[in-house]
Length: 307
Image (tube, rainbow, N blue to C red):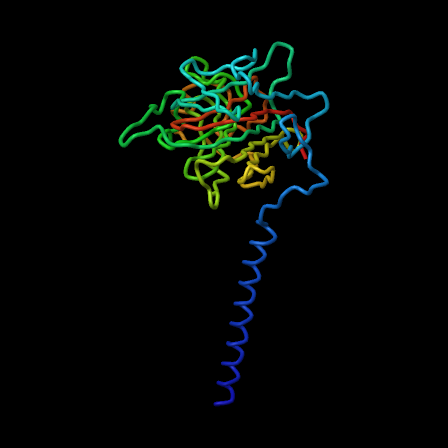
């Protein structure tokens, strides 16, 4: 009897050890294989744009490219800003924005292809928030808000839509790549303005994120599977030395729903379902900022070849 008890105890110990090793293996597999750490792009594959900034994906042949006029951002027929914005140029030719609401829109002229599979790039230096205790610059239904999160100072670079205002709500589709003052990044989808926002996906925190330093930021979107789904990617150049790493990605192939009620969502007849996949192009791509003082330089948009 004692021998049988010892035998059972030995079997239980061996089985427990195997189970622990199996769990450790699974955790390591998830960490290493399923979610590998971001890797820099190999030197042999590095392509540069006219600002000598690395391209993640190449420009499509004869595709649209837009580069900001660093001498005078206002001097561009396809660029428009919100009317109350002011810009001040530094000695290094970068620009300071002192406004709680920034909308730099890059539009499409008649005869041009609309923005669709795009890589939006720029360098920014976040300085401070424009908010004071208890303030709220925008209500939930103004163009400045994003479904109630307007208090968080952040940048949003978006494309695949048109005007974002209450007069033409169905034009206000967008895939929004966000970078927040606290180092958070995320993606949101806007099916119509403003009752068609989804929750945030691809949320991550930037380690060692600091304000008052130059960083590079990219938002990329491209269609997959014969235009039935869309991939969104965010990249960061944390030390502004052209060393870009992917920090967020989301694929939308459906079932990413607007988080408003059915009553509100369908109060505007845009002919879209609550999980509409934004595979369409749009005439306007926008560099947006809310409640943030920041510097910027070398903004660009390119139509890319999807991988």
